[in-house]
Length: 314
Picture 1 (cartoon, rainbow, N blue to C red):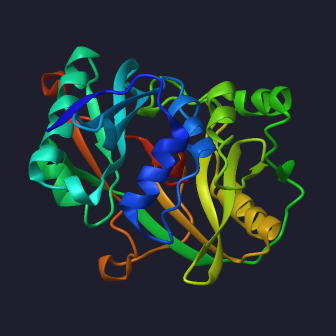
Picture 2 (picture 1 turned 180 degrees about the vertical axis):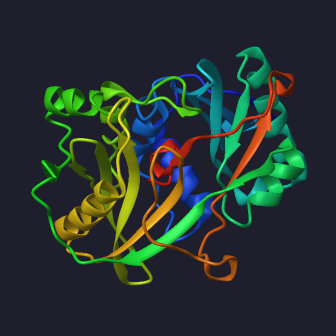
């Protein structure tokens, strides 16, 4: 018999081993230190972990994590949670086990008064989320690629590696580009953005002009290195221009020495997003944001910003 419950005092070393076993892929190796950061520090509101337990052996056999976030909708803060890291060990897999996990997730959304459920799954998990939790396709993120001349303009005043040992410096810098509450999207300020970049999986660099900030990261796909443009954030209450976007994109590719770049997301605060949109048949990933609104009577969600730092991809 198996049971679903909220996991208290999670054992991250055990969870990392179980997740690695369940995914059984060379591309899915889970690190306990990174898991702890993702669940406890990546976003300010922490995480609720729903675990599956085999009652006979009292062994954890699966889980799903609710990484909690805050979304501002027309000036009002709303609770949200992204569903990540769903896994069940092979011996116990089946529709009943998956439904037990999602039933407990649903209970927690209501108990904690969380309005929005988000998911950004791969192609295989899309129908699972929809079938068992009624997460529906909500927003297909624009996926854009380009090649540019790597170069740092004199107007790019900040151009350096992010360093978690420089808390005061980066918090002060990021505070200048804090989001405003009248934009619909996840809220970012100096401390929260600093914590978001302190993971153990990726490296980041920070580039800024007077009006705009860019967070970039080096990535590789199928042996091809590229520069990931993880997020653009405008200086608080300032409107950047097209030249700012171009200067920062070139600076990021110069920093990582990869002229090929990728941007995924939406950002209506920008005059443009760089690159050329990939047609559906060429997209390597759906980049489809799924969503469920537990209070639809409050009105339709229309995001102004949703970028890679807003979920666990970056």
